Image 1 (tube, rainbow, N blue to C red):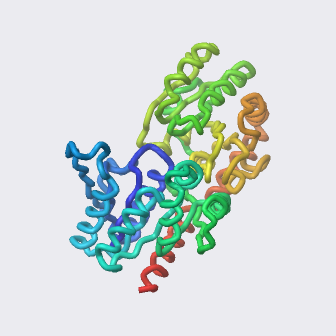
Image 2: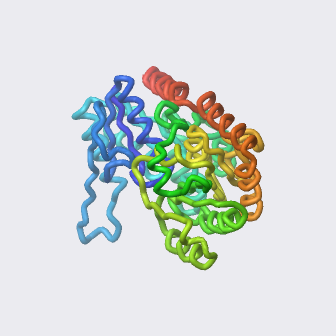
Image 3: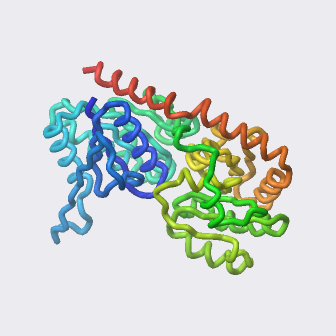
Length: 373
């Protein structure tokens, strides 16, 4: 198949998942064309079978805000016609599904598309009163819709009152790339042998509650030798760095910024801290689990569908860094508990969320979409 993919190419879960889907599809012999305003995250290197088509937006003075949605729809049509695409797979209802709807109309129905909902397009953007009607319209009129967790499916039905079929296809991890064997030299950059290495991975937005991560780590570091590696960037990075200094842990917290190769870093970590106020799935938790790093995460959203509390990680109430610290210390201070939970985390990731099992579900969804005619 020839598949067009549109996503936000930024450092966030939806862009990462879309990039990974594209690479997984190409590895299976499909031809993938990304249609976005920038090269998607994790696609900075060339990949056979993966192509990129930039959406250029006019800065004509008449427009106070550049009409990206219209430019995207036009680029979708151009790419579909020039590359003879079979379908589009758009990630996020706003604006991508709306642009796909317009592109399909421009091609008189000859461009089927599948919309994948990821979370904030429903819980934040779509629920905004100014966007709710258009988001509902995009969901109802998409030829096929998937979402990444049962929690998100239920939220979509509740917020928008839609009754159409929404298939749940969870996020995934390539267990051949995300492994437990870490490079000792890489680990030595961030922690001494006697220290535990904790990691946080996010886009540093308020919903991720990075400050709670710093507060939890300060308590952990007061009880056992530990370092914290923070991967990612965003508006809350500077406040988090300031808080680390105030709490006296700046020397033990490394802000690594955006990183393209996440798997090697997670492979040298002992545990993940994920104190988010909301996660529709929790991709960071899953990737850490595949590397044998149990997550200590908030009991919110779709995370309980990924992490089984006490078995392959711990779930605590959101907004409680003390509980997060206590759970982390309990895991890290007991070698037996850590070994058991680390092995269970890896087993869960590979048994339930391996790309080898999940990607065929997307391919089946594409085939069903094309069969509708």
